[in-house]
Image (tube, rainbow, N blue to C red; front, top):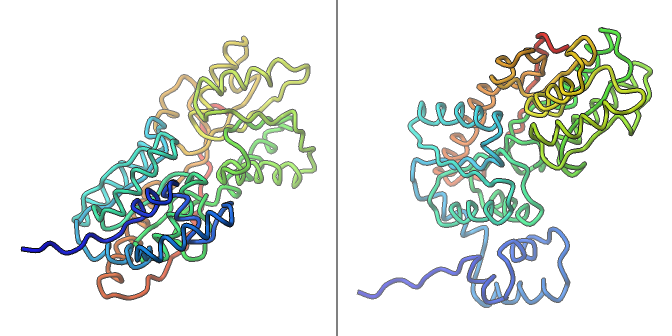
Length: 343
């Protein structure tokens, strides 16, 4: 029996062009920076090979695997562990299996999970990470191709991509309102990444807007940006604030794991929480309730995120099975302030 000819994939185009799959995606989607001659060469090669990314992606979703892929950036972070558990439970309740893809914040690993989508191994994907610049075009390619995709990270704000996200800036302003109401005027901010990380950007914007609202100065020397949003980096970064002549009396930590590192640093400097320095986190992970000084934090509604995200992808899968063009949903949830002993 003669086998049908193999369809050309994005990997085939990339191999023949001598570039990465992300470069092919950027060339075909006209996104990101790419040399004009390289773009022309890739497009001509794609036409010659008969590669049509949208048609390919649309073909993928017609295969039913009853499996949803979750792409997360680092499940050693308690927040991602908790959100993963909520999404897994919601998938099972709806008759779907969850495949977990931990990228470890590595673009190459992230691309391997995008390969899983391209190979038709899952019916939909939930993305709980900040997509790397190299792979953004591929996510957009999948969305244009009617692949059911929803982001639960605020980094992907595009009209044609579904998202279920939390109002980070509003949560940050809640923290500032609370700290100012407790008499704090010298407030530090400890975070990770850069302004290209939308969660960092939004929380830092909320921090700045909260200061301005209360007539306080936005001091660059009160802002510490860490390489990684984990306890050890936070311990060192907080030390830089505490060793100044006028250290802050309160610290807003980007997330609860950073807040735990802040508290450890404060104690190592012979100070007390919250008597000498108050600390507020963000995310409301369970670990924050178990430390010596239970953490005041902004609570993200993880269970609601899971329910809404799974609900969105199931609706997108249903639309696809009826060969309809997918209608993206944009859902913005509100966080809440949880007051405990650290502030």
